[in-house]
Image (cartoon, rainbow, N blue to C red):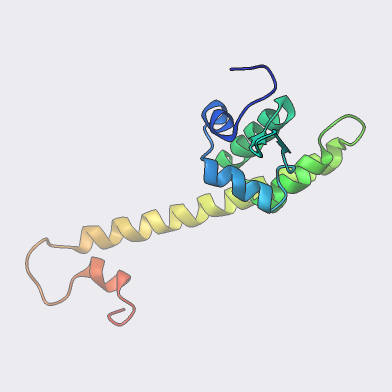
Length: 136
């Protein structure tokens, strides 16, 4: 691949991000509008690769698009405020911990429900009861 001049397909392969997702990120202004070649095709550079890789990794870690947008605004020379970045990451961590707590509660409920299930044919099934609003 050429250094610093890649097509959207090459960018997709390099970053592991689907082409339609790349276009979406451009539409919502997470990625800057790319340069165009003489034939009108998108051309991406090193900065685009780094930005897209950053977005992908942040999404893998569960950051929302708004959080990522804020982090991108804070990235770069002279813009980064460790305090602001820490605040965003702290709020995200609190959200993760809350979800973990919810999942633990859900795990206990499901385990108790499964334990009540005899596995035989019965008119009422504890597992279906907790899933069906009308039966609960």
